[in-house]
Length: 202
Image 1 (cartoon, rainbow, N blue to C red):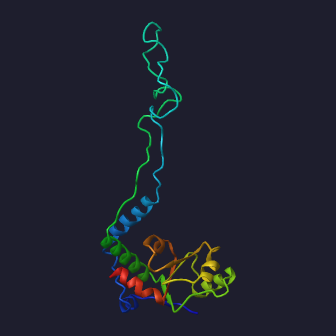
Image 2 (cartoon, helix red, strand yellow):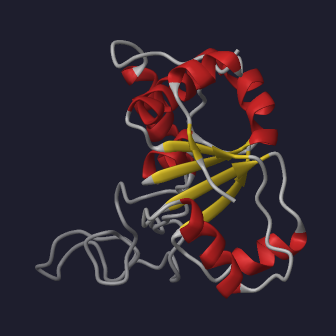
Image 3 (cartoon, helix red, strand yellow):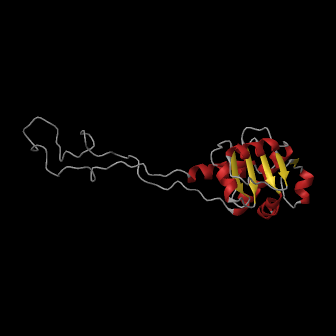
């Protein structure tokens, strides 16, 4: 099993549309920011004076003590009191429209192909499900450290063989995103993934 370098001419023959470095940089930026924002849980939370434990009893009388006027002990100036303007749960997610996603994918694929980081193979599978066999199969294709293999689908034994290899990522053509593509030193495209990628860039 050997890999062939995927060229811009081969991409055009497979109906995969790409753009050059003069277009799509903002789309890539917007989509990466959206990916990172969507991973934020937004669960940071602090309690206001209405939520901390304690009662509403006035801590001492209004006049005659020589102290400043105070109400209950849950006020923010006291230890154990509420927090003023502290973090509250919120939604950080961002939406990116389909045309921007398509343009970003075209740009990233174009850059990777122009840099000769994309190769194609007719098929990829590890029949025995062993990690050693998986590593050997990948080494036969590329010497890169971080490898992304994209296919229409993978069988269960191949997934099992790859689960302990952190430097190699298996993704289907329908789910692969530009962040994964950009993080890879080499991208291996299985022939059955080209049609799906073509539809995603059309």
